[in-house]
Length: 387
Image 1 (spheres, rainbow, N blue to C red):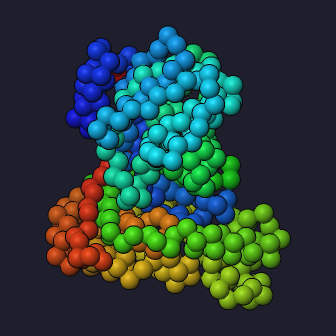
Image 2: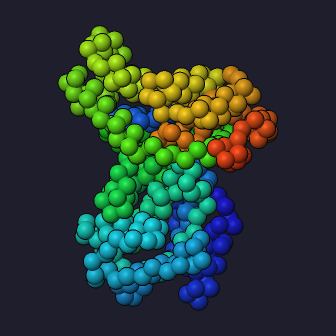
Image 3: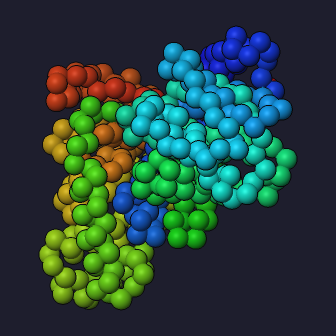
């Protein structure tokens, strides 16, 4: 965890309010190792929390005012009363993520108090690493330090954060990002069952780094195409008479898949095979078998490319460059909603410099940019820090 980020957030609080904060909390961003577009099909995902995070330094107030300072935006301020309706702002968007959480907590009848807070973070924005979920979960974690919140589990906090993004901010995201931010475990990925919300920690093999490559391909089609993919998956589930594609296995797909429109069949095949790959990935990581994990990540990428059709040529090129270096010693695939964004890789530590050099040499984004490269470790989830 960045001690510099924590120190900076505390220092801004001290400068702004004239005393040290009484409460400091953090919540991380995330990357999904495998399990793409399975979440809204009630399926399995395997993300991990990252050592990039949002930090909030705060103190309780004696009144009902919430006063927020955004240290990353020139100390911009948002302030409002808990006794008045909380309105959504046209701008700035960061303020709405905080307001949304406060609004949901209020509507649930939880005993909120006024709060002074300073927020800062180092989760890269616009890279698909869930800076927004990190912020929302951090705000939940802050208020959960108050008396009367003891009954809320990390999953409860994650679902509050998701509800605030869905209903207040207006982003119809799933629950994976918030759950992994709330429940992450150091040196582990977490398998999330998106139907039952059960979580299982899965160790990331020692000696392996998580590398993330931001392609700088803007994901311009992701919203409309996301909705189309979701509708196609729902069409397939209705055909099989099940609640979601989670309930379809390969035997059923092979038996009756020919009755589907060929495109809908391809979409369904991706989801069914991806769920199986997540389950297999859990076994591979627990066995420390990076070669097997690499096979599963490669198959996932091919499925996203050919069956779900959500990759783009530059993403495919970036995957090929990394694969050309690590070969069978690790894995690489597109991660996220698709049509641009990021590539994730599990890379032996002794290959990190070679992969970095190869990508810097061979990859250029749409405007000639180098890929932005992050080398990460799986980190612990949200929680309180020493004040």
